Image 1 (cartoon, protein in one colour):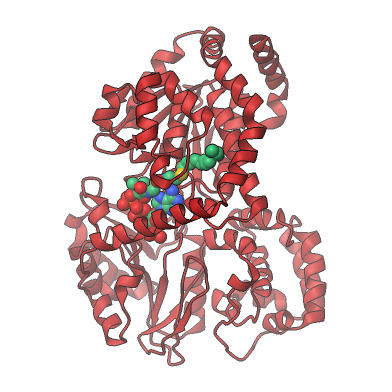
Image 2 (image 1 turned 180 degrees about the horizontal axis):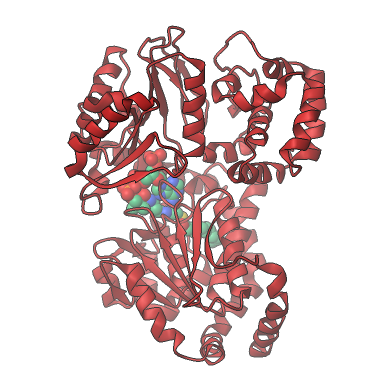
Length: 581
Ligand SMILES: CC/C=C\C/C=C\CCC/C=C/CC(=O)SCCNC(=O)CCNC(=O)[C@H](O)C(C)(C)COP(=O)(O)OP(=O)(O)OC[C@H]1O[C@@H](n2cnc3c(N)ncnc32)[C@H](O)[C@@H]1OP(=O)(O)O
């Protein structure tokens, strides 16, 4: 019966094929939120899905939804024969479910979250394709569940994998347990699950939790995939379903009850306390591992009595090229990546000088495709370093001018060119702007706000995609209401302050998300003359003059509409799929 259903499903998928998959299936595509990319190889029929959601590829609702959709599409794509899952993060395959989704959850979201997790597991576990995991970093809990849902696992040495849910005071779902049993056997599974065991790759190989160890799991998966693809797909797929059918059926039958249990279980006081403690430990473990980072940045920060250690969270620095010395100090004190930016062509020479000075230390030198003036340097030996013990500080953007056009340029660069998702990283803008002020946010809940007047550290530039995506789910009390107050100067700000105009703007925004820019601008101009040109020149700082967060989002949309690029469109699509818009 099950096999018959499977055959029927494969047949119906075939007919859906043309509809479900974009014509340009081959090549590289990115997810809406840039949390993963898919590289589809036309020759081999193998698609590599690379997860890149910093800092840990933890699976939150949006990430799971997008990933799941991508896998389902690949499952239906006739020309795809194999899928490899991997990560672009240097030491984490996936840290499992995003604990913040389960800690102090909102009921509706929690339900959606678990439903989507069930869904992605089903899409992977019952995929008709050959699915492999190139586990190139830690893979606890949900990360291991995902890997277990694939057909073959190759892992990089030394990292850890396992179902450690009991360590968090929670319980792995029955279907994950079943998939583990199917791989390592009943006894070993029971032992591992009860003790929440995390195994090193070497240990995992011994108990068959993984199939191979390799320094280059992706390459090894690609090689192994070729062996699997020698066999006729239908025979291999049916054999897979013969083996997995009972587990899939059981999951489908029990999934409603599983969901009910989950949404009841997670909000329980004891569970919440356990999750809270686990989260605290996760954070404090990191603080203990921090070395003191002695650098110019710290000196600046010390001068203004600001404790850098509170904000030692990230691996990236933005620096003006004029800060060559600063960059060198940061590198010497262990920063993993330094981005050197320079905006004046005349300083190209200086940039070259820095580049030459640092050449030996950097593994890679990349020019951003759309800019002559941004350079990325990557530290030598990055892969070998133990990332756990690396000092992580903050993102710094230097801007030693208050010239508005440069401000625009910086925000533009940050928004358009910087390929990373900052997560909850604090971002500082160092400037000599005399109206200096800094807003430091507690990035986790946006509740804490401090102001530190300073000439040197003037402004915290809080703009990141994760945050943007998170804004709609913040409770009203968590929305930050105080932003830098600067006299509104532009029509746009007037518009955003004006209730009636705002309403009008909101109405047409609703209708024009998907309309071409040329059609939007005249409408905007009607409401607010001269706004079109203002929009083009608009920079993020203006948005910070807006008094209310919702206004800010609208402002953000104006800006995105104005820039009219793919990235903006994607964000708009994400935002417009939410109720707020
Ligand atoms: C009766 C039963 C009924 C119903 C069933 C009930 C419940 C079912 C639910 C069970 C399913 C659970 C599956 C899960 O996946 S739970 C999540 C478990 N995950 C973990 O335990 C991993 C935790 N993370 C780590 O151990 C380390 O981060 C890791 C080893 C992966 C990497 O270490 P590294 O030192 O390289 O990085 P860190 O500095 O620790 O992390 C970087 C930042 O990422 C944050 N982080 C890490 N993991 C998570 C996560 N899972 N969720 C959210 N955030 C995470 C970490 O805090 C760091 O953040 P910052 O400090 O930089 O802000």
